[in-house]
Structures are given as structure tokens and as C-alpha cells.
Image (tube, rainbow, N blue to C red; front, side, top):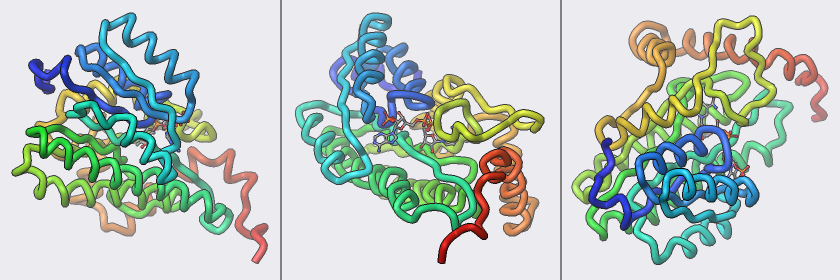
Length: 276
Ligand SMILES: NC(=O)c1ccc[n+]([C@@H]2O[C@H](COP(=O)([O-])OP(=O)(O)OC[C@H]3O[C@@H](n4cnc5c(N)ncnc54)[C@H](OP(=O)(O)O)[C@@H]3O)[C@@H](O)[C@H]2O)c1
């Protein structure tokens, strides 16, 4: 394992968005590796159920914190409820995606994505990285996405939030190295979860990855590799976007992919119907 064995029991790993999808898989993988875990999300029932399961099955300590990370009060609640705890692994995972024609999307929805996907990781990282630096080190993982490397039609705001995470994390990574705080960025592609239930993969060449694979793969590389891209196809997309395709062509290709998987949703949303 890559996480320190000697700190396993005295310190905690904190996973945001642990009630489902990739975050739940991170929590379970950490517990399997005997890490005590702080589980954070809004759905209390799911967090309590997971909390019980992880402590019974893996014999680890768990703590569930029910909070809305898109509000500053929600962030403050998490900070005060972890005040006494030594957190040496932070998984900035909670996120949401809105998709469709930009002109049809409510601006409040896009702003709340920016709050959850960008502001929350910024505030939590500022708080926990300061604590980690004082306590002698720690590891922080940001869950970005393969869509972060170019603009993507139909999910433009979501993709931009993931670009923010990537650029932000790369920047602070170099600042924090000397403080013993190690930063990694995961950039998964399509993964089975509740993020985008309207995506339809039938009759498409895309096979979403299992959340468990994404969690296991990225945790193995946490602290060892800056940018972690799970899955062969996602690596091909990353390298072709970086070295082969002009930026505009790359954005267009991603746009085609999303127009295909979102075809059911797009059939009922038409930008011409938007009121001025
Ligand atoms: N699935 C993919 O294809 C994919 C690909 C690349 C990157 N990602 C990224 O992976 C991360 C996890 O997404 P996922 O696919 O696992 O999605 P998911 O199944 O929808 O899980 C999202 C998690 O975030 C929590 N969450 C949502 N809004 C929240 C809020 N306001 N406050 C606190 N917690 C909140 C949800 O719990 P509650 O509803 O209980 O709050 C849930 O636990 C996201 O950052 C996403 O952008 C996903």
C-alpha cells in the first residue's frame, strides 16, 4: 500500500461525496486498507449505513458528517466537526454535473456546481493542508476528469470546473511539497455512478469504468504520481488530445461523444425554446 502503515489507526482519511458512486468506492477501499474514514455527504441514511458496514466488515473507525458542501455553512460544519481529528488523507471527491445546451441551463444550477466542484475543494484544501503542514504531512487527492483538458460542448461549465481543479491542484502541489503535503489529481472518464443518470451508453462504443476500479487504481498511485488517469481509453484520449489533435478538434470530438450519450436528454431540450 502507498499510505503510511504507522499512521493507520491514529489518523483519518476524509472522503467527500462518500454516500455513493466513486466516493463510496474510495471509502470502502480505504477501510479495506485499515484506514479510519470520515464520510461526508448530504444523505444521512446512506452515510450511516455505510459507516456501519465499514466498521463491521473491516474493523475500522468511521465518522459520518452530514453536510451540504455547496454552502459556506456546510463547509464550516465539516471543519468544526473534524477539529479534534488528525486528517492525513483528504479525498476531494464530491461533485455534480449539469448537461445540455448552455442556453437552456439555469444559471443557479451552474453556479451551485462551481460552489461544490471548485469552492468546496479550495476551502477544504486550505483548511486541511494547513493542518497537515503543521502535523508533518499528508496527502490530498482531487477528482478532476478526462474532460478537464479541453472545453467540452454540452457540459461546458462542468468541464470548466474540472479544469479549475486540475490547474489549481498542479499549482499548489509545488508550493506544498516542502511542507510534506503531497497532491495528486485523478482524471477518470465515464464511470458507473449516479452523476449523470440520463447518459445512455446503449449502442455506443463507450464502456463506463467501475467506480471500484477507479478508486483502487488512483489510491495505489496517491502520493506517487501527480496526474492519475484510470483506464486505457482515457489515457489514449489524454495523449491524443495533448500531442495529436488541434485543441478545437479535440473539443469537437468530446462534444460529439456527449451529443451521443446525452441524445435522450437533448431530444427534449431545445435552445430555441429558451425565453429571452
Ligand atoms: N462518474 C463519472 O463518469 C465521473 C467521471 C469523471 C469524474 N467524476 C467525478 O467523480 C466525483 C464523484 O462523482 P460520482 O460519479 O461518484 O457521482 P455521484 O454518484 O453522483 O456521487 C456524488 C457524491 O457527491 C455527493 N454530493 C453531491 N452534492 C453534494 C453536496 N452539495 N454536498 C455534499 N456532498 C454532495 C453525493 O452525496 P449526497 O447526494 O448524499 O450529498 C455523492 O456522494 C465527482 O467529482 C465527479 O465530477 C465522475
